[in-house]
Length: 480
Image 1 (cartoon, rainbow, N blue to C red):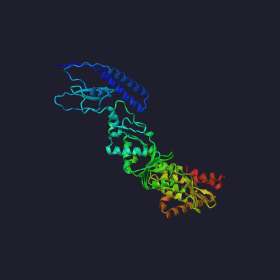
Image 2: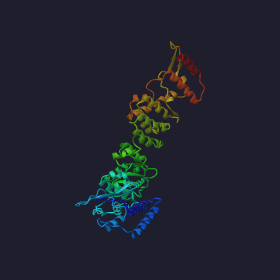
Image 3: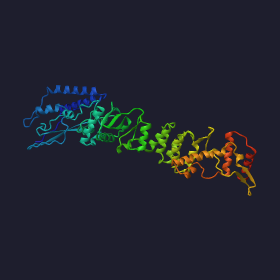
Image 4: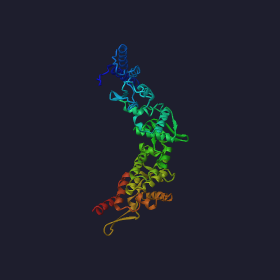
């Protein structure tokens, strides 16, 4: 005998009000604007439904089993059990599945043919939420759905770490799939809210778990708000100060030593773990550029240290240092400026483009003379003959001593002395140094004319007859 199906209005109100209350509780925990309205509305509906149900009359057919009082009590508890796919073994019992769908979330409740709830389907949604730590979501809870991919032991370690480091509680691992699929989306916790109150020491294994979890979540918290340092007790993680920058501990020994010596307060060296390298911005040549840019060029030791670091770097990197330097004046008597000059000449000698290296050097170097004057390469006359001849038969000539009247012919001796000292200190060979100082070949007549004009301008003097004659001869025989 077939039975006609009809909508149970009271069941609809029971379940509907329970859903409103459940969402209201979640709204209260997450501080949604409509939290009070949802809870009040749901409780009001439940009150009305329970009041009306107290005087409800139910028609009972003699030839059918009725719903037990226990069944009505279970339905009055809320939205029913959240587990799915429950089956009950029984002889001759037919299981009918009733689905209640709320905002796309399906809760399955299975009933026996006599309309009583299956015996193993007794756990309510409220108890399930409590067991999964969902009802304890507060401001000290931290939630990120990506961590569902972590292994159970990794997640357990991460839970302890978050409590130790940030005083935050993570939902249980079992709760994550539920929170991810729940129809009312749980907001991801903001990593900017994490705060380290003091320095904490953790193990390498704990650091790897923390790093893995942050990487999965796409967070770069460690180098934005915290810094890491290796200590004798373990790895210290502490709040990042305003002027601190994390650098990779796997840089070369020279770079690490330079950073510790000249930037000890704001360049913080990380543990030497390869997984850090990709996330650290200040590394390799970028770090070298930073060291050059922030160097105290008045500190001789620091300039020497940087110069030694860049010997094997590109010409562009070396040029960064030269561009920051003022003229380097070497005093043979006191030795002032020699250490810097020595280091920079060693660096210049390694330029791939030797012409560029030589030009940079000659634009920056000066030598102090015995009379406390200063000369550079433009003041040097590199010409061995006493007389300059012109004409096909050398019929015209000018004495070199008649052109340079202010001791310019002795200036080369200062450079020769410097070169010999550099050779003794094994900075470079004499051949290489002569090439750097452009002393490998004698000056041409055109070079001498250029030097004469330079000296006339430097001394602000009027040309003598011999000097004017030399200029005219150059114009006739060189420019013709």
